[in-house]
Length: 344
Ligand code: SF4
Image (cartoon, rainbow, N blue to C red; front, side):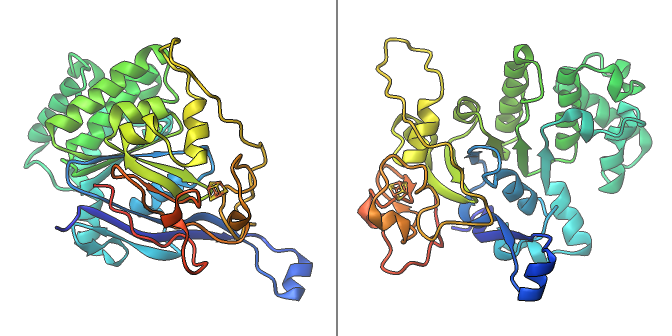
């Protein structure tokens, strides 16, 4: 079966500004923002990318959206190589893959009215036969995200709306062009806590109604648990654990996932909790360890972890883990994370 999205050994490196000495010596320092990420996503699926800030999840999203070009690896969408798309194929890809970024205040042009901001994608993608039809579509989209009556928002500017209203406008704009894949990066983190649930419920409802495929990027495991059926935990540019969300959160296998999960407050105070302590030292992304990227912080580190990278391989219950505690993750050669994952 072909997958809607197939990400294979994706890498993104940024060369660092080198000083005079390194220029003379010919050395080249590189930031490894994404370091061999692979996953597949089927139509209608929902994947959560979790991890601390700087782990490479937003860069992964930007690569999928083709806002950045990968250093290596590939992204295939509906069987086609995204890097090779151009002209009308690229425009079609940009219509089918929509995104919602963290800050709704930056997502809309402050000098455009809401109507103009929402008409623009319809004009670019030649959706609707006339202005009247397009305006009607905009009204329908605003109505769908519960901004009523829609006409009262047409001539407003972004600064006249609240954060929650603005994020609803951004959601309406993304859905106006009938996307297939929606990528949302920390979609409620800038919003007031009191309105987050409303926006998330709306996104979940609309995604189900339209059978959208979704990727949610968040440091918040509770959000991912609520929104996604599959969860991938990222650390230092790689995926260290991926599998069905309930399995990953209820029975975390990788020591880093265990630490993340143990840091989330449990609503059930009677449940026994065992906090997992990890060291504060985070390796810099331009000095990646030779072995497991998590070795310097891992409470269960072993000798083998220092020099051999574990592969991301199946453990049980549909979960894949990159950790030498699980014998299948220990490669015969020290190649690192190149294994292909199929979460579902
Ligand atoms: Fe810890 Fe070793 Fe597993 Fe890495 S491979 S998470 S260092 S036990």
